[in-house]
Length: 144
Length: 144
DNA sequence: CAACTTATCAACAATAATTGTTGATAGCAA
DNA sequence: TTGCTATCAACAATTATTGTTGATAAGTTG
Ligand SMILES: [Mn+2]
Ligand SMILES: [Mn+2]
Ligand SMILES: [Zn+2]
Ligand SMILES: [Zn+2]
Image (cartoon, rainbow over all chains, first blue to last red; front, top):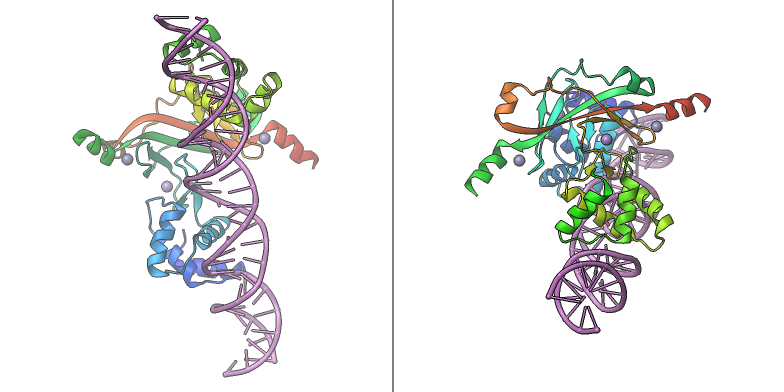
């Protein structure tokens, strides 16, 4: 996502105002590679703005998505993940045990459905998910 | 998935019984490449067993998944899709407009995260989703 | 700075997919 | 046949997310 000053500009351009709640959520997302859920953003945001509601975090996150500042990932972990890394195309590794999501940079230029399949389907996006077990969960399994 | 007779055997081996409801759901899944939702299975099943409940369809589908006879796909379309094609590894094309899901057979052997990424993550499965617009939705858009 | 306009806040309720629970029933096993 | 136990299906609960709304507070204009 863009730096906070730029986002501020863009929000204003949309006719939206930069409230303290928005400021906090945006701050939490800057350089955040953890792919947080809305709920974890909410929990962290309340530390700074205790009165913030979950609804406001949803609103903010949806606004940011409309503006293209974040993408919302549905990776089958039960709830949406917020990804502020929209600059560098990438894919994901998802831990089946704990749901943690990590970035994976791979080349997908060779990935294409057969000509036959493409004839009836206009492909706009390719998404690769590596499913597996993260180091943490591997270690926990070892000691258990 | 296996032919109905084999599934029958395997159900019994699990201590499960082959009820009329299960029979209908299994029948609906045989050679079904539409990746139906549980709800669509339910709607079709009630035509044959009007008293069937949605819960029973969920139960049956979950039982079949535990037995490895189907896979349950969460593709971000709002509800789970049931895929009876477990014999041939394949991937999917998902229409962003209507949610229709089609099979796509591609080679993913070359798809690997960097050695660095794999060091901390034991990858067990690679999932490729082609997002786009199906022929039907393209045509509807044209005439609209 | 003051008045005005309007978006935002946050509480509350609604929605939708899925799972949990349970009394009655019905299908296997002896 | 008799009994045991899994299944049925109704009902309620759960969870993530969205809809609604009166009160508030932030921008804007003068
Ligand atoms: Mn990412
Ligand atoms: Mn399939
Ligand atoms: Zn993990
Ligand atoms: Zn479509």
